Image (cartoon, rainbow, N blue to C red; front, side):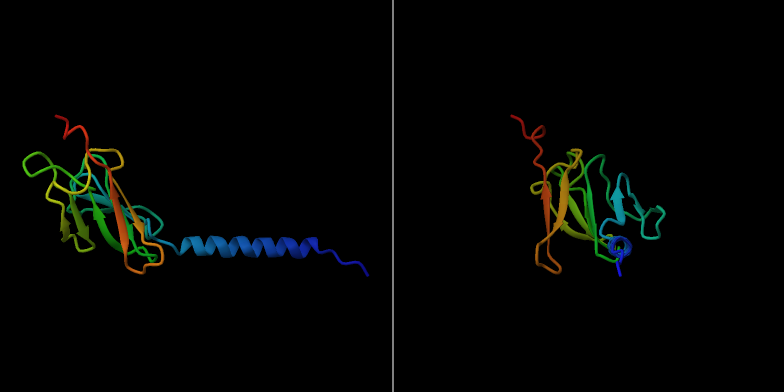
Length: 141
């Protein structure tokens, strides 16, 4: 008796693909975006829903981070300028409260296309790194 294993391989491949896609659907770290002038988008439902309670004002770069269930953790404009010279750099928590004020001396520029990026610390449960770009045009002598 000869058996055809190609059918079993196809079933295995389809189950693997469905399992992998199912795992990807459950990851919501990028579901909530804050940007612009106190607005954002929430993709948790599968469709974009407008967020109108953001505290951030930025004209270009910004970053947001959510947990794997899609719950917002924090967001930032990545940096900024000294008070009186533009938007100061801030990090806000999920309740739109300031977690950290960069006071214009830390962070990069909120005026760059990609002012910051947030990465989860490898092996860390609740630790994140926030990298920002230095603003050179503002500090030119």
